[in-house]
Amino acid sequence: MKYEIFLSDRKTYLHILVKEPVTSELLKDFIGETAKKANESRIDNFLFDLRNAPNRGDITDHYEMVYKRSSTLGFKSRSKHALVVSKKDMFDYSFVETILINAGYQSKMFTDELSAIEWLEK
Image 1 (cartoon, rainbow, N blue to C red):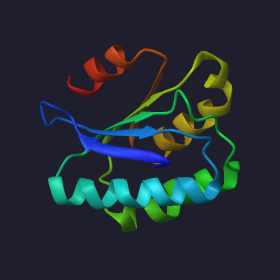
Image 2: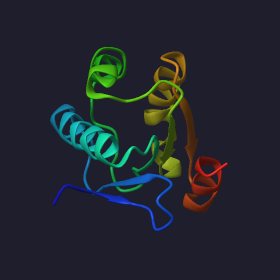
Image 3: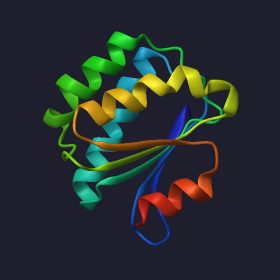
Image 4: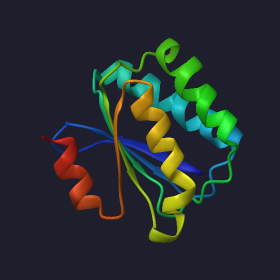
């Protein structure tokens, strides 16, 4: 499986574990399924674990996903999106963090999962 999505033990966020490079097709798949699970569980906090998933998607695909598809999928403005990335992929994901923030979502990039969880649960 290319990714897994599960509810945290404390039921405070959805954990999206991506296991291979993020392409435009994979992005559409896991974001669509994340939105479905978020709507079912009524959870608006997300931990995207991208440490083993270098960003291979086009910036335009990320932009369109956030600005055009996210609200129609049911993502709530001001929801929290923690992006946990490897140090070597920080540059490739920094624009994703910026796009999310500019679109009205709370977003922060981390290299440490525990720090991301602490931020999500504040």
